[in-house]
Length: 173
Image 1 (spheres, rainbow, N blue to C red):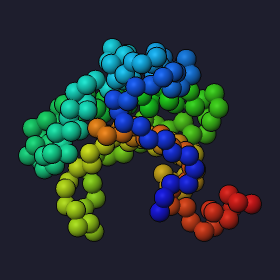
Image 2 (cartoon, rainbow, N blue to C red):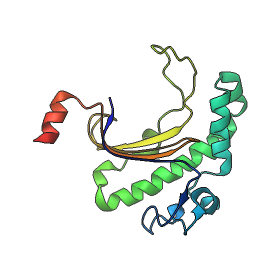
Image 3 (cartoon, rainbow, N blue to C red):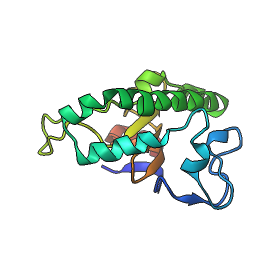
C-alpha cells in the first residue's frame, strides 16, 4: 500500500535554493546554491559525511560480517545523530502537534530487516528512519509524521500508512 498524505523525496546531495524548513531548525537551512550536507556538517544535529558513506557501504556489503565490523560507526555516526534529530523534531512538535511527541528510542526504526517471509534475505535496511505516531496508538494505527535518510534520498512524509477500512472511513467522515 502507498502512503496516504504528502511525500517529498529529494536526493541527499541536492542543491537547495532557499530555507528548507523554518529558521528555528537552523541545521536544515541552506543559502542559495549550497549543498545541505556541506553546510550542515558542523551543525549539532546533522549526520556527518560518514553516515552516508556507511549506508552506501552497507548497500554494497549487506551481510552480518561487514556490519558487525562497522557497528560502532553505525552507533556513533548514524544512530546517535538520528536520536538528536528526533529530539529536535520533538521540540518543534510541542508547538503544533504535542500528541505526536515520541520517545526517541521508540521513534527510530531498527536497522535489522525482518527476512522471515521475504525472498530478499539481506539482513539490514540501507536507510535510517523515524516515525512520530499519535500518543496511545501503534506505529501504523493512525496518521503520523515520518522521515528517512538513505544515500539516494531524504524522505519526509505525513499521513497514514496501510490504513484499514475503518480508519479510512473515519478519516473521510
